[in-house]
Amino acid sequence: MTAPKSNNAPVGSVRCENTSLNLLKANDFVAQAIRERLPNVLVINICSSPGSGKTTLLQQTAQLLNDKLKIAVLVGDPETERDAIRMKDVGINALQIVTGGMCHIEAQMIFQALDHINLTDVDVLFIENVGNLVCPAAFDLGEDYRVTLLACTEGDDKPKKYPRMFLTSELMLVSKTDLLPYLPFSVDAVTRDAQDVNPNLEVIPISSLKDEGLDEWCSWVLRKAKAKKDTLVMS
Ligand SMILES: Nc1nc2c(ncn2[C@@H]2O[C@H](COP(=O)(O)OP(=O)(O)OP(=O)(O)O)[C@@H](O)[C@H]2O)c(=O)[nH]1
Ligand SMILES: [Mg+2]
Image (cartoon, rainbow, N blue to C red):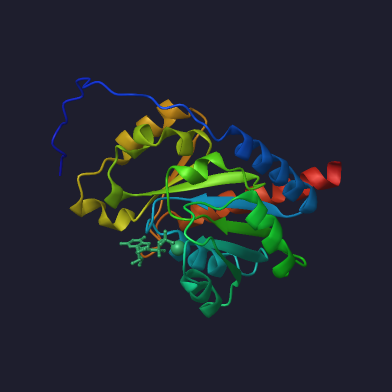
């Protein structure tokens, strides 16, 4: 299927200034404290729009890496504990962060949550951020890597519309690829746009339901976990 072409003629717009710089400075200070608190744990911040498949991917990832890495998950949600329950149901060491309606997780929330999750011998701490492609991009959570999922169902125009998320990520997972035959979505086009925004961005297409691309994703996680341990040994 091909999408109808849009007319990209300028229509006129107003660019707004960012007025929250002090808040972000304070956040960065706490993010650094998180890094110092977790020198031997790989921290991966998983971001996406609502419903792109973050929890499903983490359920699958924990299962696939079960005999190779010890995993824990902090998961953010504006109101419910549903995602932590889903993860605990499949045996994952998970803790819900309920943000009280906030559209992103802040470093202070992670710092506090670390007192309530057992990280003994944990190799990888995943943070599932609140579903949102805008606000989470501005908040460093002390992660080593930021991974953004973009589901085929969202449309392939998103990287240029929400560039900061893709600019600040190391990896984009194009999710729900099992639905590609039914959608006007081009993996090549979305990769081109995302790498226009961030030339260093790696891209892996995945389907958690059909087990496509998950080996490549798990290898990526294993490589990063090993690199983190190696850095610790050398320092
Ligand atoms: N077709 C298809 N559906 C998927 C895939 N992964 C997840 N889903 C479905 O997408 C819906 C949302 O998945 P979740 O894993 O809850 O997404 P999420 O990003 O964690 O959602 P929020 O936490 O609410 O932002 C569920 O109905 C999943 O079954 C996939 O690879 N293919
Ligand atoms: Mg979720």
